[in-house]
Length: 596
Image (cartoon, rainbow, N blue to C red; front, side, top):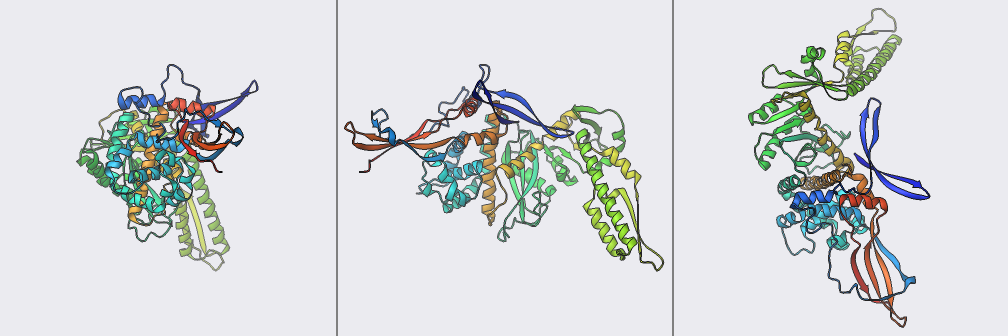
């Protein structure tokens, strides 16, 4: 669910309010519906910050807000009465404030500042490594770009120098790149800390783990990176080298850990590594692993069983053939509108299979089969016409074309039996191309469209529960989508293995901030899609109000520079009120000597 800003005029006044909108799928495509209209909190409601604060300290709100502005030694007394020359009042140094202020608060909420201060080495540097890690992560969270863009543009446009007390000239690429190198060894400690901290915030359970693999590609050759290989590209860039990333998340999409593999590693060959890595970090326990059919191999399943693990996995489409008779019998149970499931005992008594069929998926596969059948048959007609006209003479060429055609339209290749023969006689037509439809293929396609098969070694006997657990795997897929689209983990411009791994770690930390904000919004009744909220808060700026002062006799004195935060509009106030936080009004004050 996501937020939509609504504006209407009534009695000559403009009113702003928010609608909580949900996307859902129908047979005609995606649709949206309004779940609720949001305004100020009612008495029966609690804001999101109060709920998080109760989890952390047993109180409605922690003693000290993580979003309070920093306090600096101010030589000037605010209560000092002064005379201001109103004609000289001006606004200067406008900076982005709302989004970076929220991100910095999330960083402190997760206690990453204290953790990294203890983990990362300390020296005589002016800017600590923990602060550099925060800058890299906040930049990736708010406006993902390169380290060079952080130095040249982004940092100077934000109010982070006030929040972190780090001047812009101290943030440069050499320091940022070095910060990546120092941050990488902290990966395992960060994962363990975040597991505990996020578990306390959101009452997470870790008995069900979702695992999936994606790939992200490089710009460049990356000859110095042994992990950069060509493999199956999920980004549609097979010409680029890549790495594979295996991510483990909870059913809520909260990340537990990840591993990076060479770009040519098969998905199924990552399972043993990720299971051992999770056991090393969090101990060996009887967890339920949920994986898609790309991870399934008999060796992997035997490996999980040998370690006392349980699983719910997808299966290749070909395995569905073994359960053809069960597709025809009764006993289906509806788990949601348009989806039915059925429990089928395994032949060996160790595993159980779950048959599922979806009406929407059936329509989709029917349309795909029609499209591929039409393409295949149209191409065969063209081949026959070319053979009849004498342009297609060589059987070897004809068979190669048929092979390419079957590869391009593999979903329909089994529907035709194609024969290519030489013609007798001296006519110009030397080849004969003929084909016929395979009725058994058509019958099986009509029966299996929209159906898929799951397998598990759980003793659970309710197919609806098993199916719902498996369908939560979409949370891992959403994690990759957020990392790629919102946090722009791709393409990777770094060329060494350590820098690549550190870049992925920063993206992982930014995704943790994203999911923390999503969980906070969910408790505040604001949905679970942070993008709209970030865009709204990014409109809130900080700036310097220049107040030129004069003496009683009219002579110019010092100029007071008040670093303030702009007033949020009514819509932004509603969002902040539901989150349970307040914007600071003033950040700093400077007294400047009057120019004579």
